[in-house]
Image (tube, rainbow, N blue to C red; front, top):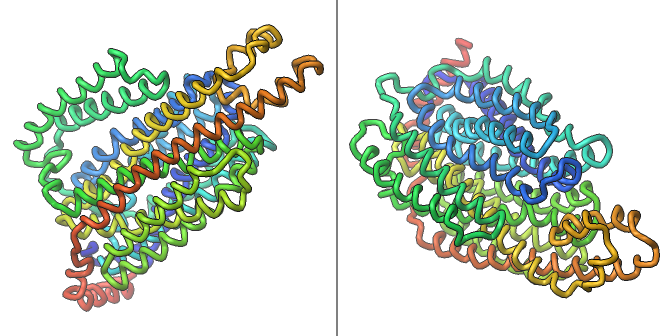
Length: 533
């Protein structure tokens, strides 16, 4: 049931506020992804490339469940506004970055702000709309995510090529300021909130430490492919050890930060397992397609953004269709199965491409994968919210982003290891004579895809007499990088088979079971609210 006496004007104002917040935070990821090759070229630190993404995901993943639960206790409004202010402030600071460490730090604080937006935004929709309506509007939120993912690469590519990469961060200001003003006027202080509940401080600390240790271990492993290093396993062991006190604290406390009994709910558990796999697969599309287009095919940042457009359009369309379908029919299982199959087929077809694949064929394969992912994302919020008690709305909905972020972070580690290991193992075929022909500063970067992406600069710094040899080397390196990326997509396709299995396993529940009893009462209350408004 939505909150009482919420007029349609206020409800749709809240919807618009959440949509702007989602647009800003999700666009930021794709804008930065497109600009990263240029950022690394200017700031240096190719070995820390993944940390620009990892710092953001690490911070947001830790704080998503905490903000979700806190908004259940203290209300949604000021957590949402605080998240928006934090996100904008550190977007500006990120744009001022003078080195890679500055940028990574700013991205971490951006992630904290994004956590509040991702955790609290969906809960606001759940508070102001009935179960029947939630499907449509959560589907629209998914569509906004897709639209921002389309516009983001275009804006990122244009700003990077024509102005400066710094502006990919400043662009958040004209979006965030209106959203902040709207949040102040349209979000009620009474949304969510339970003044009698107590804050689970120990649970929050233990959960944060557990997630931090796990994700740091994964991040270290992905950077140097050092899965057997003592520091990596040490972090994994610390994470496992922290789980023991966390488990007993959460069992005893009255208002735990993470309600463990929710995992006894089959729909909640299976749906979030699906979210994990969606995050895992989605990372491969959003990060490694731009790397393929820029690194393998030598196209500009703007073109790599344009190539992502079809997949995001497909994701947007399927998200909206899925949301409207679940609102009208109250069913989801068959659609989940169909979407999972499309995702798996699309990822598998991408894994079969070659370095010279026509863009039209690549786009066709991405559309299949994007359409399947969009269906899942558009319906998941409604399914999970319908499966749990209303007092857990914020926590349950924040779990969607939480497990998707965990999946994305694991994807960072796994795909980073696959691409780096496979690529460097093939470089043994590069002629050794280059060791004597190239300057030392260029030789030190040969093991990195950045060497391939700086092809024109390298040719301009070397004698014309060795250009023929270098062009042959660049062609070989393009094939090696293509092989590495497509192998990562093969692993993503295999993992997404799990989506099919989970879609078959998830139980059916009635999405609108409490709607039929309350529709007349809700309409009467809204008419009264509108007349008073």
